[in-house]
Length: 336
Length: 157
Image 1 (spheres, rainbow over the protein chains, first blue to last red):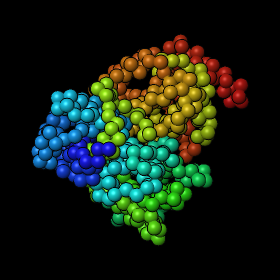
Image 2 (cartoon, one colour; image 1 turned 90 degrees about the horizontal axis):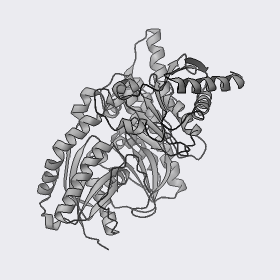
Image 3 (tube, rainbow over the protein chains, first blue to last red; image 1 turned 180 degrees about the vertical axis):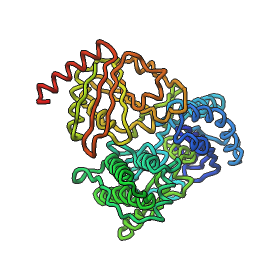
Image 4 (spheres, rainbow over the protein chains, first blue to last red; image 1 turned 45 degrees about the vertical axis):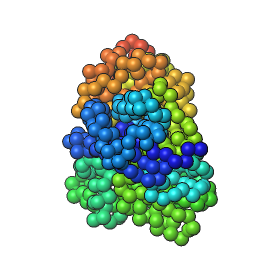
């Protein structure tokens, strides 16, 4: 087993161009992220062409900076880990090709990482794992509950049947004329409002760990439509607070029920929506009466970054699970 | 040729889509327009069932394209985020591929769309009622729409 490792991670699956160096899967030596959110703000969403073009411009300098800040030489780096999917294929390929070129030139093993495995392993940069472990992954493209009995073993027990939680935030923000990304805006507004509107909670059938946010989205749209038709003034703060309360309650309750059923020792939250203050507070409150330890990473490790890719890559390095030179971007890659 | 159908539930919307899917062939292209929350994903979920897709069809907004294996593969696109882009992300390969392609917010990629296609508009009537308007752009799709109309009529409208 290669217990000791220094891994260079590269992540370009969506907004962020990122590179990082991580020691032993737990210690960040450097973590460089350039975000395109300011560019996307003008357009109200991720524009893939913009994403690809900026990844190309930034990927080399981001990698160089990560190596420099880590103060390691190429001879000390054991492997190069890169996000294989899911994501935008054009964006993924830029990171993959950079990783392949470097791995070939520097004679290092290449490691393919699932983006969601990365989000899970972001937690291990702050807190060691205790198995069995439950991970709630909530982001713009994902809402998933994953049980892990050991490192690198993932069992998907629930996922969204329609919209991802982060997507629901973005779409509701759009209806309320709030800027992109919608999550932080709604989180911020909801602190000033009351959760006074009774939006639906979608629990699906008894015992299901799947999620559905499409009905909630429609309920908010209908509500806004009706208020506008009556000529009344919209209280965006209350809508934001009521919408967020619905999302947070469902996420928290399902995570809690799953944690009990699978008898986990640890529950972790990952992905961009894990930055939501309402969710963080609710999760900690819900688990406070249990012996289950809860961890949610600090903000910069919740959003896309490459340290999490290197951290997940370290496990594959230990297991000697390397990728071949024909590695390709997989937009709909499943977590297995 | 134009067909208008009124649906009063997600269940009926899905059933209409399932019936439509059973009449489709590889290489067919459908555009699906309508406001946020009108039921485009619900309709596409029905198409997935009708095409024999086992996995649950979820929103492709974030990843732009989702592909599903089925009796006939389903390529589900939401090109909303391409509004200010003119990039071709390999559309032709999907449109002429082995599957059925469904494009949401198709107006943003007008230049790439094949002329020969089935246009579907969904309109909100009230909270649960929707109007589905299908317009066939060629003989092939006229046949599909005609068969769907007959099928729906024989099922009692």
